[in-house]
Amino acid sequence: MINPIEHSRTKEAANKYKVEPYVIAADIYGHKNLAGRGGWTWYTGSASWMLDAAIEYILGLKIENSMLKLQPSIPKEWKEYFIRYKYKNTIYNITVRNDEKYVNEDSDNNIVKKFFVNCREVKEKQIQVQDNAGIVEIEVFI
Image 1 (cartoon, rainbow, N blue to C red):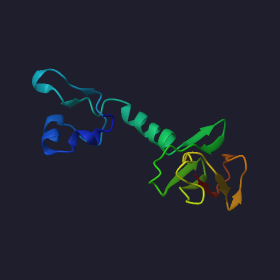
Image 2: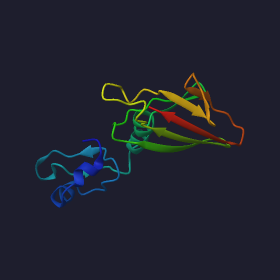
Image 3: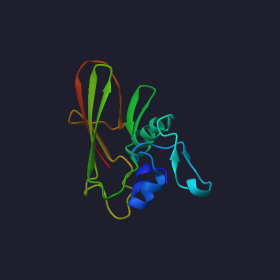
């Protein structure tokens, strides 16, 4: 159970865990009366790794060699989500949609079908990030 909130689903579980359910614990003790108790919650970099995992591997926002691309891994039940990404002085407003005309029972809803930048389709399905102090609207259909 990586998600710390899982340790506080019941009052009994929260009383055993004894640490913040919104911070990843470095340790979950397993010895005798301490079994199930969390420890070292604010002393690790694990929260930053969880944030990185959520943004890059679930929402799919990847910046590689100055290229912004999206490779989401989300459930079909998610209709859409929004990311506001700031690169230096430029804001990227990114909307990812599970659009019914591109999704069917047999399709993989984690493949980008259409990629629009400021209402223009981009066939490469990625753009170079730039510091132009503007606002860039990106709409992605999976």
